[in-house]
Figure 1 (cartoon, one colour):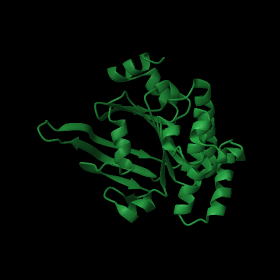
Figure 2: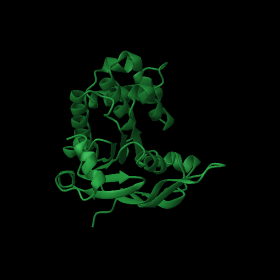
Figure 3: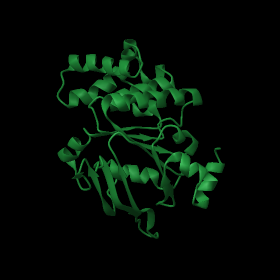
Length: 253
């Protein structure tokens, strides 16, 4: 049986602040992402999907539960151990321009992670140009600044940066929601090509079930911090079991 590349077991996050009632943002969330799979987590704003991602990427500590990456528990990793984890797990954010330093070129932004992992500066520069080419951007884009390119071009550069150290899992956090529909389609096509070339798995965070229908293999629907439904996107859209899912579908289809 195929083993998951990423696994969440009973993840729970409770936020506590002085003078306020504790708030449960995520409750008892479990799922597995398998090698080569494109798995979507969808839900409206406040459903808990971003909190789940922040726990998986270790930006937040879970209150309860465990996280496994290629069979190794990463739930409590910090410091140097966490840096090693990030070689296998990378993220592409919603706003590509904001994810780059505006004072540095796209090429410098991509090369930085390579240099941090021991590659020489000149070799890192050439590798950044190669990665931009993989993402259908010409070499001259290495010398452009984030504010000098379109949103779609900047997102391609952000994807080039994310794949620089050959991650096993790519988390796409609303990575196409700020783009025009035609640009969205181009980015999704690129991601499909890269997944097959580089043997990656995708965790695709989104609020739009119509967007994941033709892109993802499975979908998890989150509502009020819990997974309320899961399945193949076409099946979930045709035969939603929960009223929340029906409303979510009706809002976009």
